[in-house]
Image (cartoon, rainbow, N blue to C red):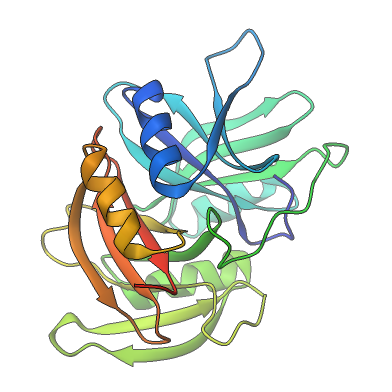
Length: 254
């Protein structure tokens, strides 16, 4: 899970049916699943080849994807986030030999996890986007885009790339986590009225958006929006898996 500090580096699905969700994402995204040993709650890793990309655990009553942001010192960052108006939902906890983490939300209510990886933990190199199975984009829907950006800028060092005028939908801000990509690492915008709360949305890269749509629908998921082409030439969909968790897909090919 190791990553340069201040960046999303792990993604976790909380679901009501890990076996069914594992099959769905394996078919749609191309991951394989690996059950992790241990005495604690059952935990599944989504692998791309032999490298872990994301994780999954059964959590009845709460179905969603959440992103982990790496920091130097979890406990210090918890204090800073609370001082900035965020909330602490689960105090800093150790997973021996792996990481220390805390579950939080930003001041507008979007859930995040901050964590510090164990420096001795093996850190195999991951493929980079747009390789199929990687995470290609991070998108924040928030109640206050300017305040939301200010929070992530001050707490994690993210910077503004550019603003895009979307007319009645408002401004879409591209942000950079430090990679200095032309389009940045993600975007943020004021949430639409039909989105009940502020939240993060993650885009998984696939080889073909058309083929992925067929896999989503045949696997019992729903396409909520798209396919549509976005600036830069990519194709996206926003979807919902069979257990109700929202996700998105992106591809350079229709």
